[in-house]
Image (cartoon, rainbow over all chains, first blue to last red):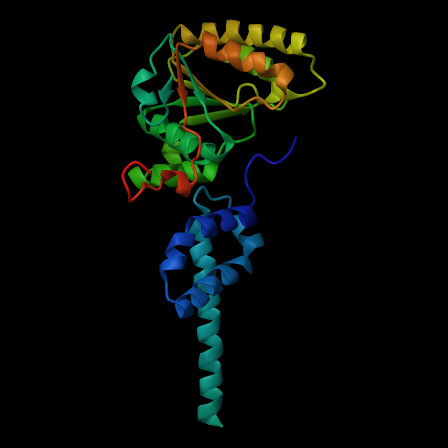
Length: 85
Length: 186
């Protein structure tokens, strides 16, 4: 008996494919950022699959927000170090 | 034969077996739409014979029309069969109820080359007897994919002949075929 539900990796690939026309309509520079959003979500695939959510995209967005929050925190830390030092 | 779409919903009434010929490339859109629409209307039983129940897509489609994704999703009862014997067992054990039954890929498990055509034919006859039992109080819709083995193509014909209505999805055409000519008569 195999899997009965697609994996989160497959789900993310399908979602990315579904949004390909949206991506195509973006500027080249924005396409780069868009790809980065999916790359940041892929860093948390294990955590996303643990949620057992019916709508995993909500958790995907949370993972993207988490990566952004991490980046903001790192930048804040860097800024504070520059100010102090 | 009719082109398939959401036109299938009004045809779902007790006593009628609806068969939909869904090529592999189209099942990603048609099956979730049908199940989501039926779930929004009430409880539904899905008998999955092709391990193709698209849970995430159905949840997405339900979310587009309702905020109660969890409670509506709970209306969908999914039962799976991985062999044709399990499919027979699934249909035999299905209780008669008024909720619609959707059988996904009824013939998928029959494509097993370990199962001889006459054995597959015998099992399909049992399946029909049980589908008839379910049809007494509820509509039954089944999806079918083109037969993989030529020696088992007759199973597809049998289901189409047995069905009260057969819906079919048009084959995908390439953009070049859809492009209209700028010049008359060309």
